[in-house]
Length: 351
Image (tube, rainbow, N blue to C red):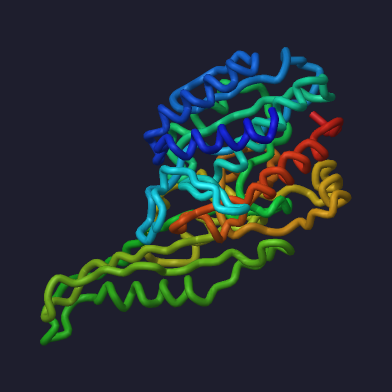
């Protein structure tokens, strides 16, 4: 694909609203683009993917993924978020940075790599529902794909490799007491019982500390108790946000928490796992040779639901995501296309 075609595709994506769970029209665009370029796309829900050439079971498989969906436009936009506009070096529009630029750069790289067979199978996926980690997103299609040995997840990282990413669990906790009349100090105050556990969440440090991500982080972010001033509350509910490093599996960490606190602890989910790729992985070593600097990412992506080795890498800056007047620099897309190709051309990985 020529650069002007890549930018034209991104502009069409921006013009087509693709709020999470409503990506059908933009998925149609990607489907048509794969067809136009001579591939045989497949689709499940609003996820669209294509293979570069016939599958060879004797080769490892690499997946290129970037999401189609966007968040809703936030307040403060000066420009129309669905009207792409180029002003100097910047292309403005909702989803331009997060993560349309990654998607079109990966598609262009996929097309270029498909011109000569590589030492791996190659699949390019435009996935849905990433912004809401919905079940209609990448998880819907993993069972349709062959075994994936390595994936690049396109997200704005300024084309530096994010080699680690925190996982997430949200706990709904309930401390139980016994109601009574406050004037007589009857009952067992659930708030006081919750306070003991809240202090534990505030102060405890799990012993396994990641060299890249640091310790597990736990924050109490909500609390609710009581019905009226003269009744000792029998129940106190609170919410804990837990950011998991790669040293713990989510289920393991949940079990350790339950051993330490008296409150009932119910996770909203346990599937958003942390990720880590070795600095000795061939892709990371090649990126370092290209002058790119590995780092640990504080933000989540499709990596959280991918049960295989992944690397987050893409044009743009995460600080621009979910902001008014979101933009991508044209030079960032051009740079991304070259770095993606230099990374993947001839890359040898193990299956």
